[in-house]
Amino acid sequence: MLIGVPKEIKNHEYRVGMTPGSVAEAIAHGHKVLVETNAGAGIMCSDEDYIAAGATIAATAADVFAAADMIVKVKEPQAVERAMLRQDQILFTYLHLAPDPEQTRDLVNSGAICIAYETVTDAAGRLPLLAPMSEVAGRMSIQAGAHCLEKAQGGRGMLLGGVPGVAPAKVVILGGGVVGVNAAYMATGLAADVTIIDRSADAMRAATARFGPAVKTVHSTKASVEEEVLAADLVIGGVLIPGAAAPKLVTAEMVSRMKPGSVVVDVAIDQGGCFETSHATTHADPTYVVDEVVHYCVANMPGAVARTSTFALNNATLPFTLALADKGWKDALAADPHLRAGLNVYSGKITYAAVAEALGYDYLAPENAVAA
Image (cartoon, rainbow, N blue to C red; front, side, top):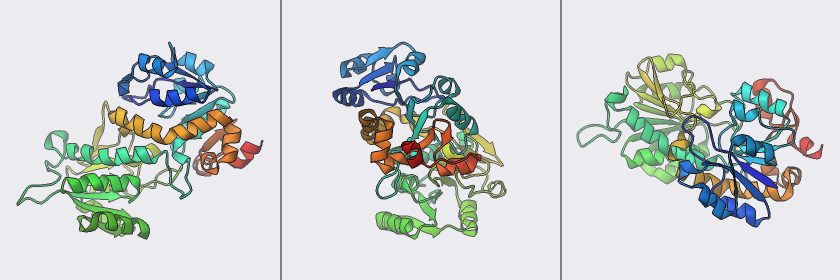
């Protein structure tokens, strides 16, 4: 199979779909890899590194899309990229379709086979291709939040961990999953006052077992979310419903009553965000203010630490990339129900139930698509 790796073009996105090491593995499996020139520059990997791994370098993205049987990316394809997709071409990347009707429409119209990293599962029902970026984003959320709390950034002028004689900032984390646990790890390391809110008793027990008294846990109800958010200096939104739009746990009315200069970091913004006042921002212009509350809603947070993120992502995606290339998409998905869960669009049909429900499309079960 000919695998294509274009350069990412989303604002301040420096990650790349395959590292030179991943390319070398694909070549060892008997495949060809076409990499757009400078695709790896953001992770300090040169065209020469890719050539040494066995890749061929293409001058433009158009060359990659025109030749490749499968496109391997990081972020959702932008409009110009979607226009280059073709019937039966495989697209393997993050998609986050539920809050993005324009992208969904274009992918449906393309006739491509679109497999989303974020809905691939494992035997325990987890999301192994989302997890590494959730780890990065969860840890980055505390860095970003701490920076935004500085007075010069519009924040309350607080040091996250305080100092002797001065209380630390109160950090409230919505969701005790991968994002939440990694945010708590960083926040406790900086000596903040940390509370995780979740509705899963197992998640709260796991957080207590890991962090002990350094982290408080609160069962999620409308009343408890409101109470904790209004008391917070920094709120991290890390709630995820796989493949679906994020629930709006914090209303605009609640934001209007938060402390002036407090900060929200909405890590769920790829799925539409869990604050009613959230809208996606970029690394070029990451924050805005609503009712004196600083909002940080960058939709590709891990792109800022592109080298760490790319290598972590490739560790998780490479086995699936090789399975798709080795077997072809139908046989690979037929053999692996967890990879099959990643199929979101097939030849003009939506094959992920939460996306179909969110955007009003008819739903085709992925097993039926594979059998077609």
